[in-house]
Amino acid sequence: MQSKFKEVFFGFLFLIFFEMTLYGVSYSAKEVPFTLEDRDRLIRVEAKLTEFDKRFEQIDKRFEQIDKRFEQIDKRFEELRNFLWILSGIFTALVVAVIGLALWDRRTMLREARREALEALEKDGTLKRVLEALREFAKEDQRFAEILRKFNLL
Image (cartoon, rainbow, N blue to C red; front, side, top):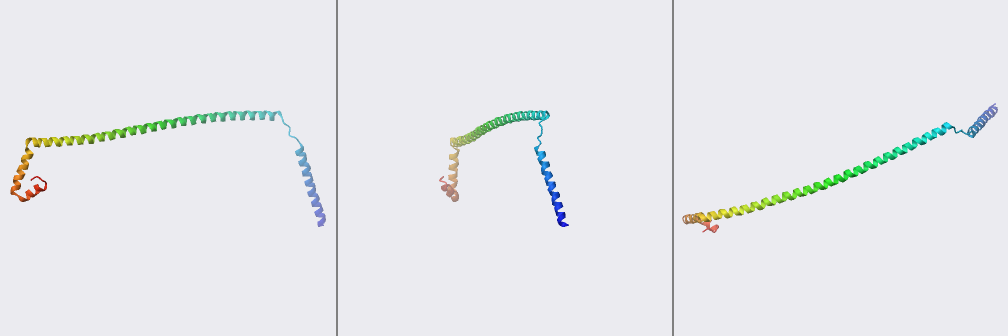
């Protein structure tokens, strides 16, 4: 009984596979007809593709224009930076010149003021009289005389 079952089962499988192959061959052997509608559809697809190509070209041109604009802006920033460096150099030079002039003027004024003060003291003879008064006082006070000798005023 089992052998009969096996024969029937294998026979049934064989028929299924045989039909599938025949059916598959018949489907693959058929050609798909190319209709006018398919042709029109392909033409429309090609037209849309050319439109997309044109749009992409326009976008590429726009990006190139934007890149050029960025380059111009970068150039202007570089020029502005150079100008600011020049201005800071000029400002530094002016500050140094003003400080130098102030120091030179102060030294000149101090020399002149000292000279004038010494001339005024010598002109009146006040300095000489003060020194003579101090020397007279040193004759009476020994400690004061030592101080004057220390500074070569005696």
